[in-house]
Length: 483
Ligand code: C2O
Ligand code: CU
Ligand code: CU
Image (cartoon, rainbow, N blue to C red; front, side, top):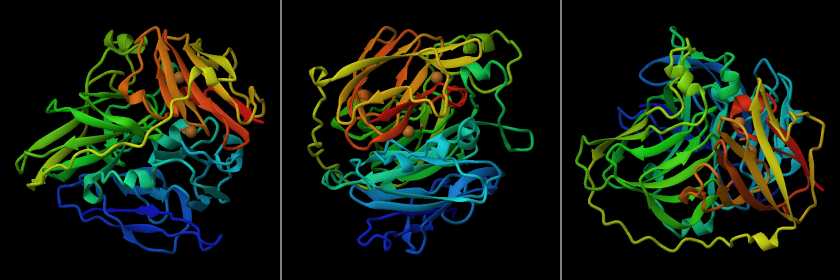
């Protein structure tokens, strides 16, 4: 039995009586490497960024950098909230370098957004307080200091921030042991079994790719399941890897949600593509499988844009890491209990009102360029205190992301959720997993992707950036102010 820590923060009835922390021990069966159960412990409201040694599966231990409400663990604590809750967190930096936490996908006040200028020194703390105003969805949080995001996230500073609401409750989705949140990362291991990090020259262009999959901090995770419907909530927390997520059985999955929660209608898919920073919510059906059946969640091979996979193939003495687009096993499910359950009919999903092109007050274009060891947006690299764009509060804008380089760029906007309008060039379509609210969208070389958003939640300075974490650290990031 493996221990996993969970943190649950719930609504503040009175300002400081705010927090309920929930954590607990796994009840997973012996071969399961991932645990899901929680139990209550109402006295914690502190998250600490820390370095220590944690078990990463199969009895192996490695140094991890993590964010925890308790003991060291291989992945950051899971935070569960409901829409309308108030989150209050005292965040302590027990690393040996500055850091700050960003709540990816959430509408938060400027002071709670984790902009790199807010990074705190070792030994100091930062107080977050914000209302959860997003709809139900699979959000996440991660380290966001300038120039150090890639390594801090790689070493483990990423966690789930799950939001529930009444609309989601009404659907009766698989819950408890049948809800499986899965944070995916790819790493390289040293001969001593530690995490290797250090982008060499070409990786400062392509990004840092690993060859070993981790799920929730566990290497090549295996998980016990019932022969029933499960809800799989997948976060791509890698630095650069794009996953083409599918089942080894080739069975279809039901895509029910994306970055910003449930899609307007569920759709059957045989795979989904997931760039760095993106999330999908999937229903996976193991019913009819007998005890002992094994199903692998895997990333299918695909033709990756960019020159580096090719160069690697040519044997240029590359430092390692599986090529972008290589086939990879992600997580394995083993059926350990047969149940007879008739799946209940899918209920109606909450509607999403489409933002119409005609509603836009203006449009803007952002060109993403990677060349000669520089990563820029509209020709400029990030500067901490320069405001690149001013967006009038309350306005609706269409942002057009153009990829002028030979590498994919997963483009992310803080503070807002947007809708994808069009993709022109390249893959030339909007995919089913891009149908709902999103905060990150994958833009391949030669593509122009238009998104529409309304900037009406908070005023302040936020970020828009490429979520390839090496690109981000090297400056493919811009400040926008909602004024
Ligand atoms: Cu998930 Cu600014 O990032
Ligand atoms: Cu973000
Ligand atoms: Cu990029």
